[in-house]
Length: 351
Image (cartoon, rainbow, N blue to C red; front, side):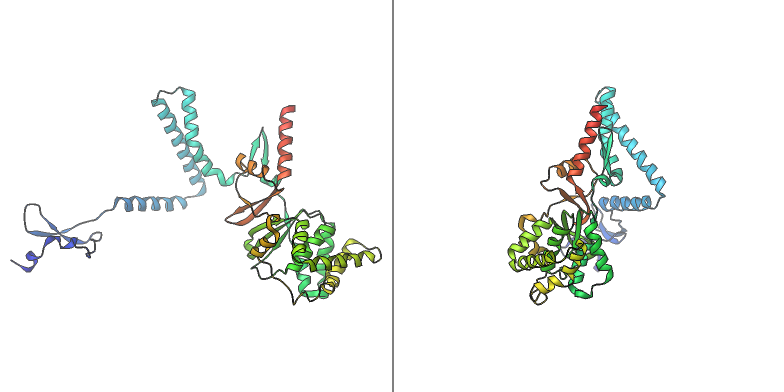
């Protein structure tokens, strides 16, 4: 007997043995006989094959022209709808019930295909969209406050112009970007809140971080910024009251002139060694100082469906942040949404 015949045919089943690869030649024992023969065995894994087919089909589908993909998706919806109706008929449902079943079965597929394109809904035949209830967020004023802290009296004319425009602006929200959490001084965050409260119509600051990524941190009113930070750091409040008293005692001037004077030199002169005692603001210590006055809740950005409308309307805060993967996308005004919803309801009742 040859050495090959003496080797047990089950050697390939040892614990440390590797499984045969696809298309690899292996020894197979012929039932009822001791001889072994060489035979090419193709190992097929049904799961791997189906997955490969699905991936291949998906890649090919993505490469189709857009119109063909839309048409194909439409046929899929029709097919699913037909299957739903057919199954309902087999269950001896009447025509109306069968159509309802078809709609219920195909509906989620339609939403999945079209959901990203939906920006609003119709309430009593009056369409409400996110664009109608979102609030624009400005950033120039808060950026200028910190820029002047770095430049001092040498602030550029562009910054002075920005401050002048801020006093005349009707912006409701200001964005304050913490960047990489190594930029903003706490004294300047306090000053931005105090000045916004006294000289502008700003209603809230929207805090973000990570620069252009704008990761949402929270929302706070100018009053709360001044009161909470001033309570934790009394020197800031004392310095600001002194500055406001000094500019108020000066001859009557425009608000933008007072603002310019405070930022250019009065604040820095009033707060002893601001640079030497500066405290860098991070999202963590901001939450510690502000407590529940910093609204850190956010809602997922998406279609203005009834669920999102309910969550916005039931919020105790006026402004709601909509985020996508933690990135700030929009700010929604709860009061504006309620007003437009009420108007649409009344218009429908009066028709």
